[in-house]
Image (tube, rainbow, N blue to C red):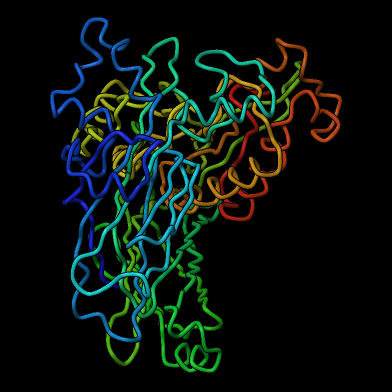
Length: 502
């Protein structure tokens, strides 16, 4: 598979809803250079059109940015050697938040969740030479308030109440520790993928035996054939019959441990890798953090079609909930490699209001500070974002356990069908992205939503989530939807409904 990252050639302007898209595109006035990945505020600051909102009271002068719509454009070339059997896919790893996308005048995407990556087959839409990509971002504040007017205002702590209806980083609406800066833009990479077939997903759950002398890695990979093949059942059968997946495991010194070559059956492969005498991954202060390298390679007679790698740590992790002696309730402690761990640590909020300017080096520096302070666990707080890969990579390397909230915080969230569908897509995407990390210790449904529900008389633990849905609708998410997704996609890791919860 080949990738073309669309990180240059981007321009930005404020969108006037009284004018057609074509009129904006034809008008050269008002465009400023745009950084992608990025958000509108950064480009306005760079162009001298917005004062630094962190200087003095400039936050107030920046509020208009979140109340209007913004138009991005990118002129790009596609590779001139695309074969007839190759598929071209336009990929957005993150759009913040309400977006419409046009490719060469065709509307190809309508989007409303900051945390859901999107893929659009574009084989028949791209053309030789110059192509035009347009992305319109509507005001999340205005769209959220329109949803709230229809669904009704709900209780919350911090920020504008319309945030509860929008799948966007909640701290952008302001918090007791941070400013109101409602961003918009392609906040994660945009790229083209060109492939005949690709590895669509890799799962590699680790199990370490109780005696710690042996580990297994159950590798599952989903293979996607390109559109040319997928449109013909006979062609697909023949293609997969001629395709194989090689799975290689390398130890922390990059020496081969084991390998397997597997035929692709109905678009999937599964195998179990055995690791005798595993080199165990330990939390910070308890031991070292050796990382194995898992390589999954898709190939046929023409050579390598796609390859994916995962760095994994082999450790036995349990959430221990044993009855207490002469006290109600149970323990709540983590045990790693049969050793009870004191999870001293901190709450991790996003490192910036504009997270696209946080480099991997800055992520690592802050994680190093946490490790140097003898922290063992950090909680990724539910009012922020599912963090960048660089954050979890650093935690893997430094032995920082991660308590991972889903992105709900301090509110009574709605749960109509369309909202739950959006959350399902979000959760499935993020669990698949993060589940291989050794640092990840627990999935948690939300931050303090049970507390506000109790404080406002909406939470009755004697009722089922269905019976309590009229007063506390998001219990259907925290106690049904999210645990089901975690059990299906990441069964070796515990799930907890809320932080705190009991």
